[in-house]
Structure formats: structure tokens, C-alpha cells
Image 1 (cartoon, rainbow, N blue to C red):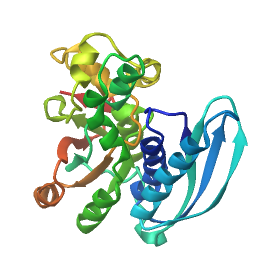
Image 2 (image 1 turned 135 degrees about the horizontal axis):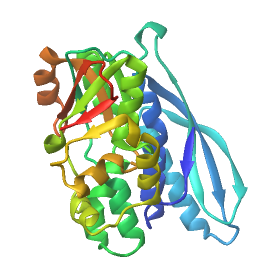
Image 3 (image 1 turned 180 degrees about the vertical axis):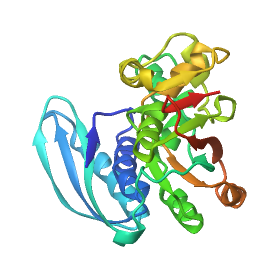
Length: 277
């Protein structure tokens, strides 16, 4: 289950993003969504057309995932909020967890980073709707195809990159697996505008909280610019999958899954959960 206030102005796109974000948890475990319940809070003076568009966006995204909306619940609240409670299925022996990464694996990342920074800039009207459009499209994209292609290869561990940012979710994988993960900062995919906005100091509050909580688990090379370090901790909305797979399977997966990159590798456990080079 996941829901949150609007991250975009367009109600239909908001519905799509919120639904894709909630569905991602099932895809990150290798599962197939079956049905979902709407969870919504709307001000009493919110126009009915906006509410219909939010629900339509969520319904279209659930249908794209191969599932159905089976009902839900709505209450009155001063701040709009929308999301889903998703039920999916998977064979117990095929569940992906974040606890199986093995030394020698490589880390595949399927979506670019920086949505927290660009969304913050959008809310402050520091970038145009056209500049923000690539971020909205990435957030609204399902992780279904990434799940399908990773399933062909097989994943030793998998998670999705959301509110804890790349560093937080990678640290959880490293600690659960008893390994150290090395991230390749130069190879990380970034959303347009994210780095330049970070250089201007435009960052969300959640980024600072992630750095405070997870900073002690990571060593970052001094040569990495502060603006790029910020993006490592940036909280993502409907981010991509991060999968640990055997290195000999990486080339085929990257060829099938356009836009994905090798973001790092898995090492035997050292004193830190993460090394960023």
C-alpha cells in the first residue's frame, strides 16, 4: 500500500504516478499484480472533474499492469492524497527479496535518478512544465517490463528505489545480504535538469534526512562532486528496480532492457555497506 499528495499539477498524470508507485512493490518482488483498491483523501471543494481524472489515471495504469481496480475508500481531507493497496501473486519459491546479493553479482538499475530534486524545483516553479515532463514520464512508467526481463535472467536480490533513495535502498540490500556494494557514480543515469538543480542547492527535505540516516553506512570518494553526491541520497517517487544478477547475464539483460545500466557490483563484506567510486 502506498499513497501521497500530488507531485504534479495534472490530475490524470498524478493518478498514473501514484498507481505506478504502489504497483512497483509487487514488481520488485517478482510478482504479478492482480487487483488493487483505491485509497484517496480529497478536499470537499476539489472539483469533481479533477477527482475523476485522478481515478482515471490510476485505473489506466492498473489496467496497463494487467490488474483491475476492485473498489476502495475515500475520505474528506484538506490535502489531496491518492494511492493503491495492491494484491499480487507469486510462487513462494520465486519471490525476490533484497537479501540474496552475492559477491561477483552486478547491480542493474532500470530508471534514471533525481526525481525528488526535479519535483522540488517544479513545485517552486524553478523549471518549466516542459523541463519537468521527462521526470513525470519516468515516474508514471511501470516497472512491469523491467520485472519481466529480469525474471528471464533471474535475480539474486531485487528492490525498487523509492523514498530512501539509491543509497538507502542499496544499503538495505547490502546489509540484508551480508555484502558490500560498490556503486559506479560515473555510470549512474540522471534525469534531465537534476544535476544542474543540485548544483544550485535545490534539494528536498527528504534528501537531507536520508543523508543523516544512511550517511554512516557509505564511503564516498572525495573526487565525486557534491551535486552528484546529493542525487545519491535523493528520495525517488516510482523509481526503478535495482537487481543483483550474475555478471555473465548482464550483457543480455542490458540489450533487452533499453535504458538500464550497470550501476555497481557486489563485493565481500567490508567495514561499510556501500562504497561509491
